[in-house]
Image (cartoon, rainbow, N blue to C red; front, side):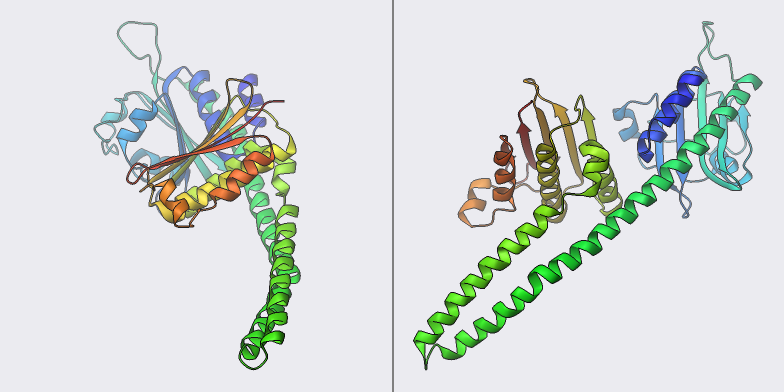
Length: 371
């Protein structure tokens, strides 16, 4: 129990907290399956995490469960449910064909004051006897109750952290708007007026028109420089505070909620990197995600960050969208941000590769060297 509580306290990201609670409950109570659902306001679940079910099984099961049957009872009546065989309960409504078979069941609401913020449940108590499950006991229910109390604290802290991060993002957006207005908008306004003046002078005073066009070129160059400076200075605050992995995970969770496509993130074996590398990796991932979500028509976009074989770090963004022909894109002058991404990679000693073909999806990989 102490190890489980310590593990929960280590995380602030909502998804990490949910996974830790579920894994801890399953291990602590020796269950075959465990799950935790965070309800939304529309009869479903905003988040739903399972443990003991493979990724292949989970995909085959299909859509997330709705708030019905025993799940609804836990959420709305806010009381524990301990059953010898969930399938014999009159509230049981069946499950999808790919769903694993479950018998004994223990479920508990997670409460924050008067609000039910989650439902934690376990199935199939492991038993050394060959005849099958032992069933959950009153002691198991009490133990899960203690875990649920601490889970409520961890979930509440994660929700507060998420809201704080969203507020920080909103403040950063506001600051960016002011930066762009002050640094660039006025310059662009001057550029427009100068271009209009040049247009009126082309026929009657070509020499003056040429001078005005030179001024247009100079103003455009200044605007580009100021825009680049504004963007470069906007190293995300989250990157300094939380590091690359947490920042990527938060941004990808936001994108997953905002788009119909499923957006996922996985990290393995990557530790803190030099600041320049972290920023370059973040910017490349943002550009690649933007392209995938806006242009590819993908149903799933996956982002992975892993440790390379030579001690470096590899960022990979893969989508199952329509793909494109990279060579044809270059010939047409439509780079989809590839030039910018390659510049960012080479700027930190890394390299960027693009694999795509019409109808085959796209994989963008950036590798940076180790220290």
